[in-house]
Image 1 (spheres, rainbow, N blue to C red):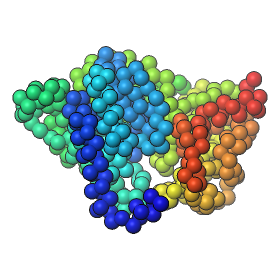
Image 2: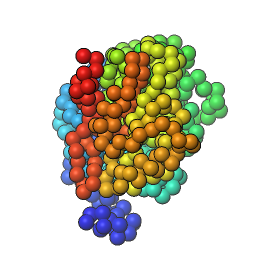
Image 3: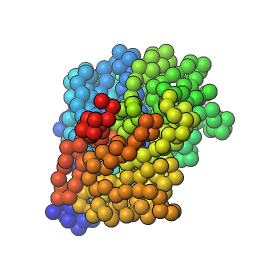
Image 4: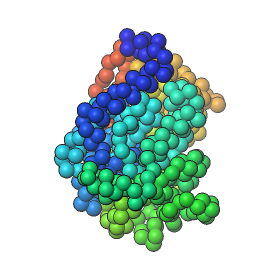
Length: 455
């Protein structure tokens, strides 16, 4: 019924409705963000990881911090999983979260900001101090109407910085007891992304850029305050290594994409005057980010669970798995891939592209349900298979648990099983608005036990 009413309501009325909700929520909770330093992280991929890394940096520096992402909510020492099936909560929940952060004595809050959330004005009434751009590839095109509108929604986070002179309004800020950092509005941009210049055009007191040994390309951009460069980056058997300002970083995370995620987090820390040694120590302590290239099982074969649900993210995961030194196992492992695509009429364009990428990298392919919603699961999987240029060896197994179990039973010593699309999500969305408790990682462990593999 709600969907039917939404379809009949003019777009401008829906927009005003969402804005009114945001304004009411901010007013009821007394604009809590004005008492915090707020970091917003946006982009297509890497947002949750950057939120996690930034939170760890602030905590290592002794700053009480709150954060919210598609993975979890956290206020100081208290944390709980995000079970909303929604990255940015509704306006009232979001403002209450910020007020709770203030009440708990937090100084910083780190928020994963989505284009859908911005489209629905969930960011309104939040006084952002730092805006971080990770990368941009096509996603949510049907929802936004075009890639340009999707990019524009991301840009609205940078507009929300409300650029002001660092020396202005100091008396007002003092009366409102806003942290000193509130007088500095900062944008942080991935300079290696093809859309970097779009995000660099937004005004800010300070603009930070990050790159992998590519700063010369942007040396003529006059408004970049500081550029941080990852030099001599190397994929290691158990992680990644790179240098920033002659400081070595040796992280347990994997893949070039995590070099970029780490650089974004380092920029945030440096922008808040946190010592690079503290940042290094914080990042090097991190074992994994839940559901993001998470190694669930190492022996007798490798099992990796990742949230990748866009073509670019899926390619990054597969390339990292097949890189020369991803793990200390066989030199030419067979990759067994379990993947699907979300239903609900969202991003249908990407389904054949996911199939094309899987065909390129995977030795065995199992197509399965991800979040079918009310769509016909068979249609979803057929649209993925339409991306195969030939007819690779693949199976369709609608039951995701059974698909995972089949992949595990195929695997032999030295193989790598890669399960993508859901990561650590706690729900699967199926027909009739039903939600099934889920966790790919738990399913892997349970099926390994049932199959008596590794026992």
